[in-house]
View 1 (cartoon, one colour):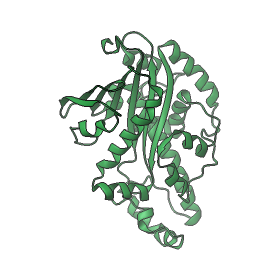
View 2: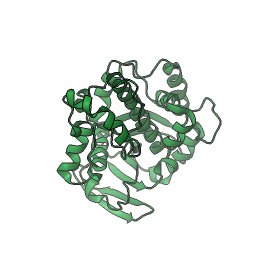
View 3: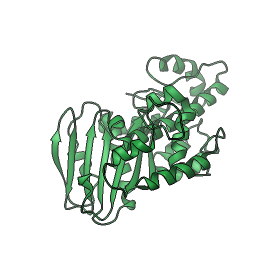
View 4: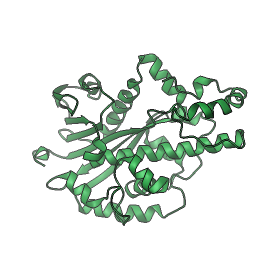
Length: 318
């Protein structure tokens, strides 16, 4: 793409979230970054190396709207995609200590969190998936894949919302923290292209994005329903941002972030449901969304109170 010309190095960042709407369980935002060393359109190159939810299963990693991917291939399908891009033999708790930009301390306080679990469950060989996929993407022009998580259990979620008097502040805080933590990957004068799924009906992001920069200014271009885009001026890197609806479909790096966030949210909800099934035998699991969350909370609230878990520690205020 012409936007990648005349720069020392070029980076692509995608950010998306999972679990913004539920009343129960953690909110998870994920970011992914990769160095683009190829020629031409990185989007087309990425799509050639991966597959959408519409395609039949094959050796290529599934990268798409995570809800579609989860509906088609379940948690294992999400996990295979994550393992194809990010390799670790550490426990989930230790990996998250390295990859979380915010919230790991709060998550560690949750009664249901099981940090001792392996990051990737033993239903397939994650090292083999990573070995094959990383080589294919390297040959396709992509290098240095990295990821970060921003995780807020209910109490931390409620504290952010109460402090800012805005639920949307959770999305802004997550985006800022993830972009800032990726800065260590970038050198002076690198070009960074960030793609983010739109935060509800919000169209104006300049003030929020300004918090990412150590110096310089964020200048707005188009701001509207279809897309909001921005560039930096006077910063250490050449930042370019596009924030738009359905970014996970149009830009596969956002799709990968969506898969990563959804996978982590579902992994944690599996632990959540397992814990409460032990505390309240016979309780049916929940996804935590408003249609079912009141039923679940009504069944656990007495036991939760006995464990010192007031409503603010279990139920999201908004």
